[in-house]
Image (cartoon, rainbow, N blue to C red; front, top):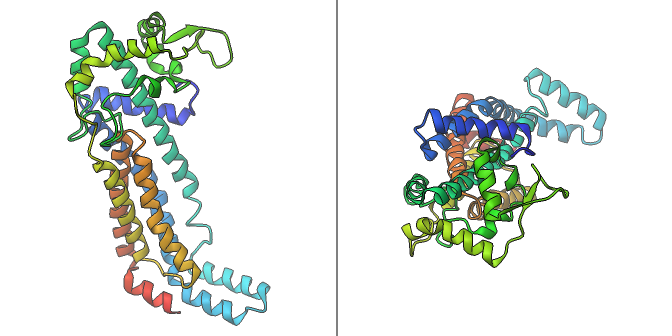
Length: 328
């Protein structure tokens, strides 16, 4: 969208270019390739972060001894800690700084998938209105294995087509790049009554999204009916991708913790709680986002697990080492 962060726009346009020019308009393949490319960019920060954490674990026994030895002399403790980390080429913030780059990319990716899904849905509506048969063929390409529409959540409780309420409650849908590139579609949405002319706050190109009425909802339902009839009686999925998202998040956290010293007491309880809370949150979140993002999240987790395994192996940090550190 025209008001989105510029990196979101670049990422969306890059995925769309892959879709149109490289992957033969395969949505799933575009998602997988885009995920691999993004992970290739962020993997260096990820490796640096985990190497820093692993090095910190190696010197943790010495740090524990220094804390006991100088517990009543904080200034001396700070000097000795700094000396120890300098001798071992360890930075206190080395594991955190790469996240300043990685975390924003994560949220940018979410926004880019949301924008891409909205554009594909608007394109589908315009095509269905002018040529229903071509629109149905286009909709068939939205299928990914068991998921009928990859732009809807992989859920047994979700319809195969986004409802008018869900699509048009997105207050910025009139700002999509699609309408700039296809002015005829923009005029069509005005003609159908989905956009109304206005100069009020929030308007773009002289229009705002119309307030939904029963008449507009009925008009929308009539346009998408051929696609709804294609999968009459079926929901959009079987919860597979949300389960994979939660499962791979849990496995990724478990694999990462295998190479780390486990704290004791309340810290250990908090760590275990977070280990199981994040997969649950991931599962719930994936139930409400389109399946393309859930696919990205799953592929991203798999790549992260592979990266973590080889980093732990290359540094020589594993369960045995972690237990030794935990005992000190």
